[in-house]
Structure formats: C-alpha cells, structure tokens
Length: 143
Image (tube, rainbow, N blue to C red):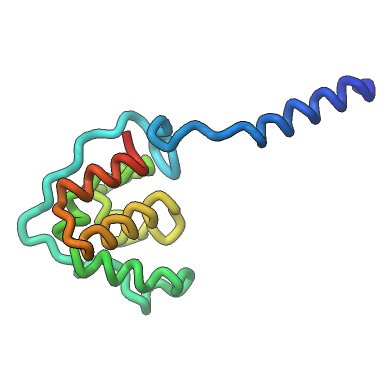
C-alpha cells in the first residue's frame, strides 16, 4: 500500500503528462493503423474512378460522413495521388488515401483519413494543384 505522499506524487506526474503538449503531428508516424516510415505520395492510377467509394446508403453507421465521401468520390484522381498518413498503408489492397474511402473504408473511423480527405477536397475546390495539396497534407498530417 503506497503512502499518501507517494500516491500524491504519482497523481501529480500523471496530471503533468496530460498537460504537456503532444508531439507535433509531423513527428508522429504510427497512428490509426500500421506504422513505419511514411513513403512518397503515390502516382494517381490512370482511369481511376470513385465508383468504389462508399455511398450514403453504405454509410449506415456514420451517415454524417456522407458529404465527405461524396467529395472524395468527385475527385478520385486527386485523392489517389495522396499518401494516407495514418499508418493504414500496410493494409491489404491499400494504394492511396482513396483506398481509405473504399471497401471497409477506414475513413469511417479514422480522424486522420477524414482530415486529409477534407483538406484535399477543400484545397481542390480552391483550385490548388495535386502538388500543392500534397504539400499542405504533409504540413498538417505528414512528415
């Protein structure tokens, strides 16, 4: 049984841990999924479409995300040229951020996938190029 002094000291250390700022996103590599070093952005695949991006009807557990998934579906060539920074690249069948919105759609649950998608869609709507979008995504979520 710890003494009162040891207990209070331990509580203070735990509280300090919560108050200290987290490491900047740029230094975090392991996030929702796998881990390991972040690689280069992929080359968008020729003829890629958003046909596999989940629809509102398929988003039964997360219907609030339908507008995000719709915006991703509208620009598959851009999203397919962006690396996902959450660590899901180790998942089978993964190619790009677009993969996070297809099939099991990790983006339904992952704030990193969602954040990258929202940023990319907004910047595309503002007229930014794929290279400019990649730089912004890396600045906020990546290396």
